[in-house]
Image 1 (cartoon, rainbow, N blue to C red):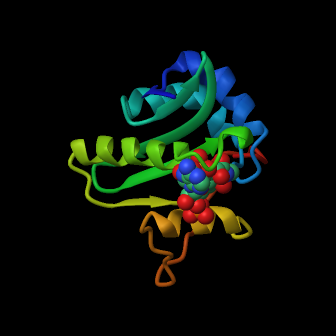
Image 2: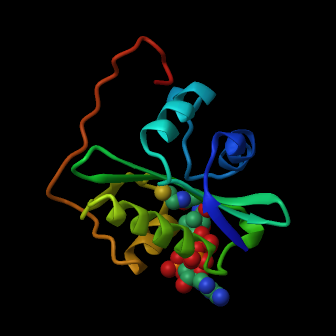
Length: 143
Ligand SMILES: CC(C)(COP(=O)(O)OP(=O)(O)OC[C@H]1O[C@@H](n2cnc3c(N)ncnc32)[C@H](O)[C@@H]1OP(=O)(O)O)[C@@H](O)C(=O)NCCC(=O)NCCS
């Protein structure tokens, strides 16, 4: 398994993986333009797992100078339970640490029970003391 930072050239293969992965929800922000903006604002923080030239895992991270945010962790089903997801998370957290970030957050769909187990095992804490509130700034139904 080969791990490396994600680049824009990975976009189409990454989207294909995300589209096959329940647990990853795609929005307008995941368009080519959206991911271009994300990667250019957060260089070196998103990673790919690759085997024989095929992208089989992704993770994306960014930060606002204060907190890190993780998204789009996905591993192709036939490559799961071999430590790929854990290795991707480690790379992301090390990259965030290297930017001076000392806490990261992620959003998990409430019905993603295996995702909850995965993050708990890695030491992530489920928060009950905060609520996520969102506001849509555009008129797109999939913003
Ligand atoms: C969550 C996800 C990324 C995990 O990927 P993965 O590559 O299977 O992750 P790992 O192999 O590191 O760990 C998965 C499990 O396999 C186990 N495992 C790891 N290496 C193993 C091995 N060699 N043999 C047997 N089991 C192993 C781990 O203990 C872990 O168990 P747990 O999740 O019940 O705690 C993957 O299941 C996925 O893509 N899910 C759908 C998308 C999703 O839910 N993403 C998270 C939302 S942010």
